[in-house]
Image 1: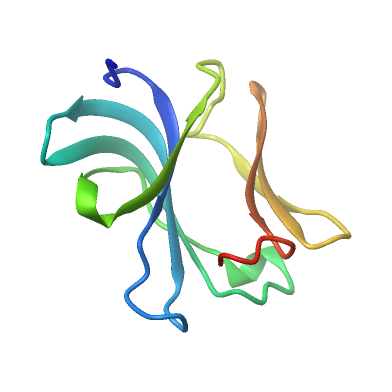
Image 2 (image 1 turned 120 degrees about the horizontal axis):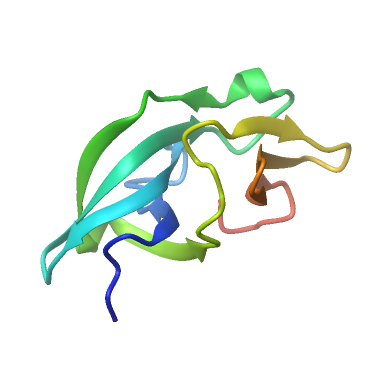
Length: 114
């Protein structure tokens, strides 16, 4: 499978249950058997989110992740504008990213794995 050029949401492995959750959303620049290089933003948050201020957003940048640190990767539609997407919070505790190209779920309080 060719990943270069795909827009993805990547959740990294947590070292311990109380650790912050880390997501990266962006475009895959390169990948090989050892790592993935992604240009995008990072999102850091704890399990209990009260407002979108509880989510720390990193700046756009190029990051390299070893495959061993990736828990899950979701392919996002190519029209999703990850560079300008804005955080939103629904009444039922779901944090989303919204852009002109659509909306994706970042975190849901119903997700027991986080």
